[in-house]
Length: 259
Image 1 (tube, rainbow, N blue to C red):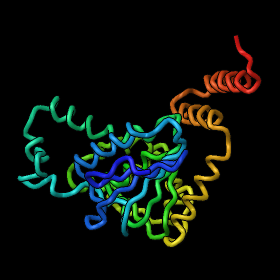
Image 2 (image 1 turned 120 degrees about the vertical axis):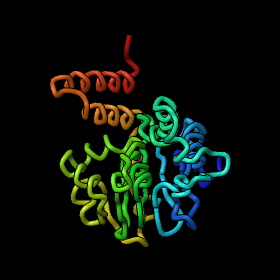
Image 3 (image 1 turned 90 degrees about the vertical axis):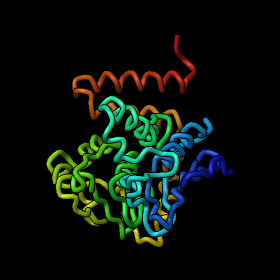
């Protein structure tokens, strides 16, 4: 069932699995503010039955990043160009960017497990969108790069935190400051990719992982994701208490107890 198909984004739902597809293959799925608004809408339209969301890009590339038209004087139809935006007050720039970031935030919801199926280029905003997902299945032709610093900018679409969490501060700084490509073998070795497969097997590998994620009871997966994501920020001394509380909720739910 197709729930959304606009501005380079298509959302389809099949029972407990939703698929969000970037549909600008002729532009290597380059991103725009309109696409970001459509991604926000896709998150809002998800039925409560959905447990896993797969993110993919049509064509040879997952997403080559921001559409460079944003940096032309004319910008996009009906949109202020980034050149114009840069002349405005700081508060307004931050307000606009906050709206863009919404397209990258909902993938982290505890009630969902999100999987990016990544092939070809995942550059800048494309890299950050892949980092928004919990898991990444990558084709062996994948090329991640954070090119913002090379353009005199910074990664601002919520990608810095997950990148440091995945690969550590020193490697994250080196990847961002140099703008170099991280290819499949390295991506798997340093933790950016959960698995790397031949490009022809990307869809099947993603389906296999999705099936495995659906095998456990939903509430147990939700509690486990919350425990693990919280552990990144929570001091170790607080983690045992969080585990006890989560397990107590699960036991009460399983036996129908509780006061």
